[in-house]
Length: 418
Image (cartoon, helix red, strand yellow):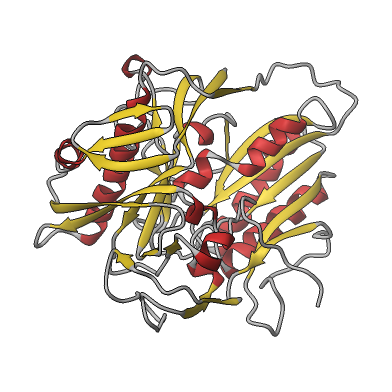
């Protein structure tokens, strides 16, 4: 199966009376887009805003960031199962808008704050602060179930992402990328055979990833094609976590891209196993056992990259999987975000076999965002424990700046010895 990503750069974005794309300039018919999004019965109204790189703008209550994607209708939905019927993702051509995002800004009863700053230090620490954004602010009808409204808001973001990218229909891309992985390829390359154990966090509505539209809450370790996460099969419904992997992160999956880049050079990319961070200890142990078993005896790997998608409890999964793999003779490298407030261990669990760990940053590390903002999108006050002027200088944990810490390696932060 081969995936072709056709890339179209975005150098400007504005709301206009007509939707069109020309030489990087994207105009959107706001009235048509609003009608398109209001098909959700739980929606009372939807605000649309444009945020540009360098603007003195802060976006609050970020539930998700989605990269605009479009496929020809005959190929099915760019986000199968989550929006539209089931179809195989990971093959054919998909249009991609570069340097652009659809931001869902909404607060739910279980939401934790996540913000985007379009200027200053915040834009330096998170790539989302350097993109053009269409910000969608949905409002619920009275009496709407919060969880169901959260899913409706997620679908609205996916609809908007498709609406934007469809403007490239009939245009030639600026560049294309191709990703082809065939499990029947010859294994004897003389280089280590490496697999990827991809943990996702799913504990219910607002705290989950959807795979082909279904929650991964009860997922057993499953072999998936590496193209599928990069082509819309896996989306985020995780507004209750500040250090969320946005759908945009998944579509540009850094670990999978790097394994592809090195495939046939110094490694043999053997495939991806998708697993969930379960809540119960017995389920965590079972997942680690079965994931290691599949990697060893089905995919036949020599080494494994393991990433996590949660806070302290996810460290237990990381270490159980590390230990289970190492006991089968598989060398492991772990990606882990740290959870230390300055004292104590950076990870809540550790095993002797975990001797190769890459830090992607320390979540509670406090940063000061000192820029004075001219505009705040989404609300007039922060969620949760964050205090301060929403339009002014504020000190917050770095985890609340979405994109500053990316558990799958797409951020710029890392830990270093004291």
